[in-house]
Length: 176
Image (cartoon, rainbow, N blue to C red):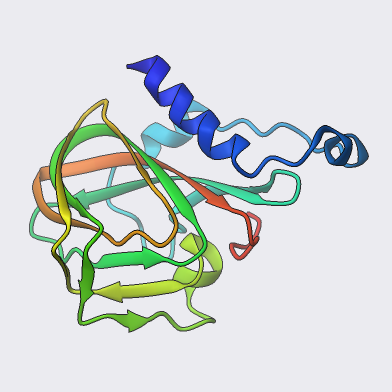
C-alpha cells in the first residue's frame, strides 16, 4: 500500500517537474511537515484556519499539503478545480466519494475567495454530482483527482480525515 501511495504522489509531482536545466538554475529548499502537524489536524477546522498546512514553490509550480476532516451530517459541497489536481490519502474513517459526472447547481467560485487563493484554485462548486463514478474510501486508500474532474463526498460514515496533496502548475494558490 505504501508503494502505491509513493507512486501516486511521485507521478503527480513529476508530471509538472521542470527539466534538469531549469532545476539547476533555481535551488529551492526542501520542506518538511512533521507528523505532529498532521495529527493535530485530524479534527474539525478551527475558525479561519487554512486547509493547507503549507503551499510551497516547487520550481515553476506550487504544491500544497493539507489535512481535511469531514463529519457525517455536515454539508458536503461538490467541487471541480479547473487547474489544480489533488491526491487524497485517507488517514482515518470511511466515506462514499463520487468523481466525474456533472456538478448539480454549479456556481463559479469568486476569484478573490479564500477557496481560490489559499485552498485549491479557480473552479466551481455544486450541491451534488450527477452521473459520476462511486468510490468507497477507507483508511489507507489513495485517490488521484485530476484537474477538471468533479468530486464530492456523498456519504460519510461517522467522519473521515485525509491528507491532500495539491499540484498547482498555474501557481494560483498563494504560498504559505
